[in-house]
Length: 129
Length: 129
Image (cartoon, rainbow over all chains, first blue to last red; front, side):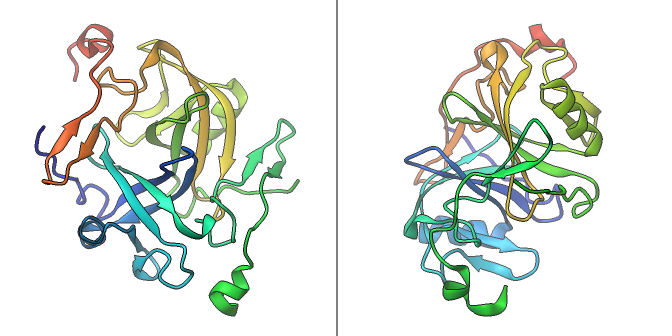
């Protein structure tokens, strides 16, 4: 047991957050939190991030694909968070895919798309994107 | 198949890299790459990062705990890399632990240490730290 102070100041108020599916172990996405987003994540039990373009981002508020927090981990330097979650709706990525890391580099330097969308982003988010 | 240009410019020349154990699915660490580190990673098949304090960082060069690349993935915005690796020496973290995310937040706001070091960092890295 011990005290850890997450170092939000190191990178100008934001820390990177790796979000991992608690059941499958898949890495779903990388996002950022500031102190406010972190505090709200802890309090609500749902992932809340800070978007550099949109501000406080309650993940899934619009799409319904929210993330229930299963565990919060901090790294050796206390400047990165690992969040284990249960992903609602089956998709973490705004492209409608299960996770964001759906392109793999091939030996010929091209990128292969591994998975397809499971929902249509235009239907979920509208035509904004 | 397709072309993807990793966006190194978005955050001043560096992209975050999530390193995951290819066999167990454990998230081992978060680090950064610039174009040079990325190119050398691709060419050598071993993880090479860019440390903001130490420059080009050939992971494991000193400790022997290098990482063989098993897969390179890029996210939807092309500004984050996921690297799946085989971790040599059993430990990715400079504290001597298997991974860097060894502290979990408890419901009383304290942090519980989940795993202990498997090597003594002072013996491997000397007294520098």
